[in-house]
Image (cartoon, rainbow, N blue to C red; front, side):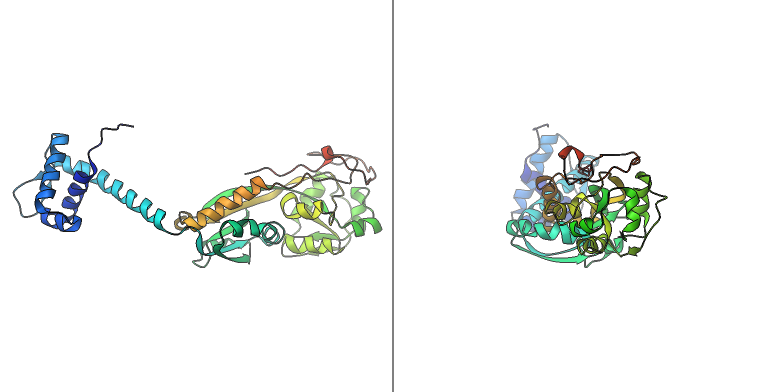
Length: 334
């Protein structure tokens, strides 16, 4: 960077005089004398070896050289003023309103919420379980964690985590009704957290599209289907983030070692004008830091045969033994 820049005070005098149209008005704004402003402008002109104002009218008029300089100087002072205001504005206090995918809110964010509140005790959170993209454009919402494709019009969004899906079941249900093969799913209730597309994707990858369907329950979101699985109601599709802690605690079991990419992914999103607010920035930074610094444990599958990215070809019986190398593939970090 070129260090031969004009001195700050003459630049301030020049900018104020050009904006106000007179030396006297600039002097009043900067709380200095008329002579001080005139002296600083002459010093700046000597630095550039060029006249910046046309002398002789009632209102100061810029020369071509002055007109060239003014936009850069104005932009620089505006940037300094904005940065100063941001630095002086409290960044760790106030109210933050967040919408979040229900399953992610219940099973991932709330168990870690103390990590944020301990770091920012003066930020009050309002948490709303929702995956409605229209919240992005509501003045009553600051940050959204959405499950989707990341295309939500005129807004800021960033991939938070991709997902891979796999069946999960309670140990109680598995002990009473085994899942030794994909064909055994016909004896279980399939729990859907969507319209059925995600189970169809998993079954197709497991070569189970032709397996007869037993009873099925359709629910509005993955939180409900996961809770139903916890209460021995059937087999749901889980993922590493929302179901990972339940699996690690043994409350849910992964009966098969096949994981498939989800149709969509988790995104952090907000309105463009909100993104620069310090209170929003610290929360978004915390979301990514928490994902990186508090990874889920490696999952253990009860399946003996590990099959990733290809159809299940056999009906190998399940076994209680586990092998870290046979865990479902973990989702990618953003």
